Length: 360
Image (cartoon, rainbow, N blue to C red; front, side, top):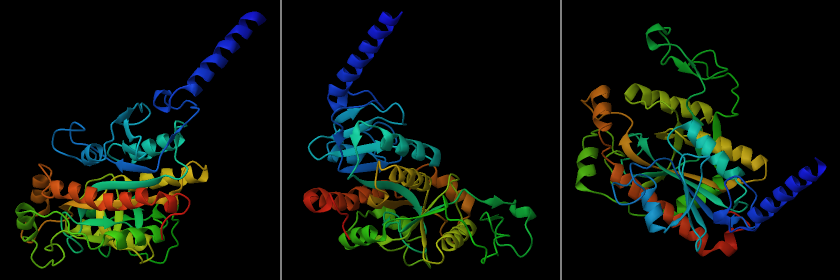
């Protein structure tokens, strides 16, 4: 019996040694690897429409093809396999839509010992709804704060007191009109490294972004909203992450109030999406564990659609039409790539400067 146990132990030791000696791309997911892959930049996409190459581009396709992310790495603990460029050491991931998937995928990557993420920068680059009060479709916004829109109290709007603007309000408050309650920011609001955001914005703010007759026609419908009618541009503005795909002028007002409330009046709601509070929650825990650096994370969102309809159009009709195909999708994914690449190239071209210390 003892002899058999000894043989089993020896076999296990040999298997582990073989695994550890394997090339990183051949190491089994979640298992120890003697030489983890060095990663300089993680591109975090949230979805892809169809195939990763050769059809209509979602968030990931341009990064995969143009950045030559050709080395496929199995990632069964996540939504989508990973892709890597060994020369540039850029890693691309697709988390899947929604807070739950983005949290799980980010945590799974951060804890995977096949990768050395010690000095990696993370660029979350995704499409979003965009507030016509602030910007036009195709515009790209660097988030200074990521605010979660799901953790809340809610009463159906048909049952709320007459003096309430909305039936949705923060936990810890006595209603939407209670602006004095001390709220717990944990899990509700995340500040992106302000020095890094400022640096990225200065680097990209004067870029000319893709435009087209189609999105020009769409934005000209937003009479009375000068920022919505501008050609696409780069700006700074907050990201509201909520699992519900909401739409309309009333909820747009709620979103602005919600972001102001959670950021203490410092933030301005600009984009709506579904994943970024999950990514930041995972990054916070990974930072605590010494597996990644949350001060090396940027969030870039580009407007694929407006968060409310143009004047004279009801919210339901416009929402249902947009669900058939976002007016600004093509421009948004191109803007994400062009603006994001400006930052990625700067990191890679001057890695000797940015490996030890994030830019300011």
